[in-house]
Image 1: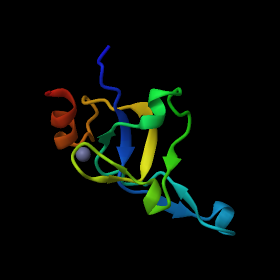
Image 2: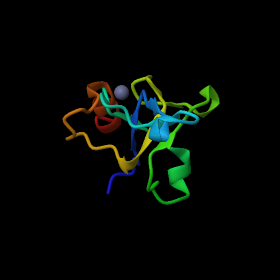
Image 3: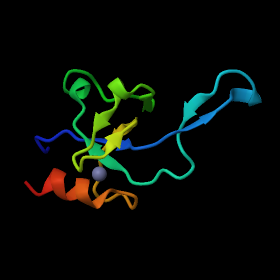
Image 4: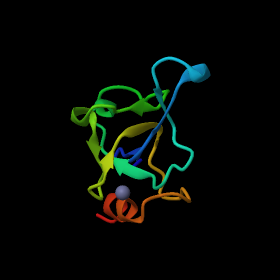
Amino acid sequence: MSSKQLIAGLDRFDKERPGGRGVPQPVLPLNIGKVHAIKDFLFQHTEIYTEPQFCEHPMEYKNALCGAVVKVVLPKMFDPGDPDVCPECSVAGYSR
Ligand SMILES: [Zn+2]
C-alpha cells in the first residue's frame, strides 16, 4: 500500500431544498467536474468517511494537491484511474 493516503474530493457542490421546502442542503453536484486528491488529516487518525463531507464554510475548505479548493470530501480514496480525475492531482500524488 502506498504511504500516501489521498482522498477524493470535489471543488463544488449543489444545494437543494429537500422536498422543495426549507433550508437548502448541500448535495453532490450533477456535474462533478474534476475529482481532486487531498491529504485529509482526519483520515490519518480515523476511518474513511462513509458519507460525503460538505465544507460550507471557507475555514473548512481543503486544498487539493493541484492547488484547487476542495469543498466536498468524498467517502473514497483518490483513484488515478477515475475518468473524471484531475490530471494535475494525479501527477502530483503519484509521481513523487
Ligand atoms: Zn486537482
